[in-house]
Image 1 (cartoon, rainbow, N blue to C red):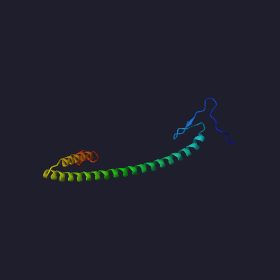
Image 2: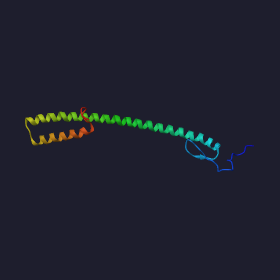
Image 3: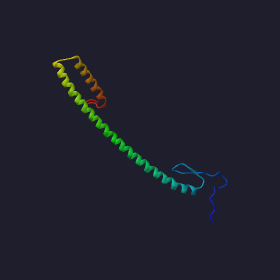
Image 4: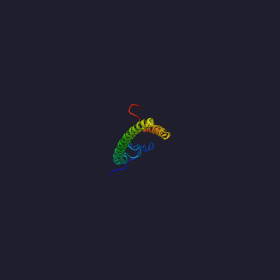
Length: 124
């Protein structure tokens, strides 16, 4: 007949710690049966975390792509503003008015604002 395992009576029972989760057990057999379940949970958690990581990586890549796309659109807009600015300055030289000068100032301010989001290739 099998008898239940008991720690020696002379000193208090020594607890055995699971190396995976840190739970403590008095009986080595309980620890063994626990380790199997604990390990399965760890593997499942790792798989779940790996999927979350892959999902986050895809979102990050998509975000970077969108960000680069927006920078390109901003650079394009800046180029259009530069062209409009040049055309307007040429017209103003031909026949200046107060509203034209105001528009030139507004265009310069717009270009500075766009520089924040997409600096020119030459500058940082």
